[in-house]
Image (tube, helix red, strand yellow):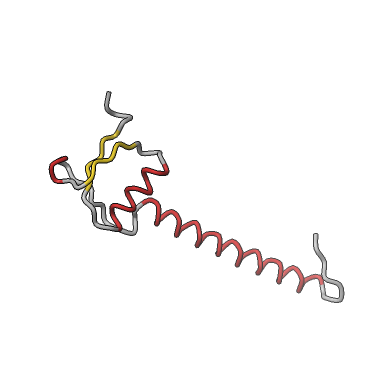
Length: 90
C-alpha cells in the first residue's frame, strides 16, 4: 500500500478512493464506446433479406470479431449486405 508521508491517513484514503472511482469510470466509458462501435449498435443495420438487394455478400459467423467489425462498417457506410451464416448452413 502506498502512503504519502505528512498527510493524514483518512485524507490519503479519500484521495485513493476518488482516484480509483475515476479510473473505473474512465475504463467503463472506454469499454462502452468499444462495445457500441464494434457491435454496430450506433448505426441501424443495413442487412437485407434477399441476395439480389445487396451490394455485398458476407459469409460470417456470429462470434467472429472481424465479422462484427464488417457489420459495423456496412452499417456506418449505409451499404446493404446479405449475410450467409456459415455455422447454420451445411
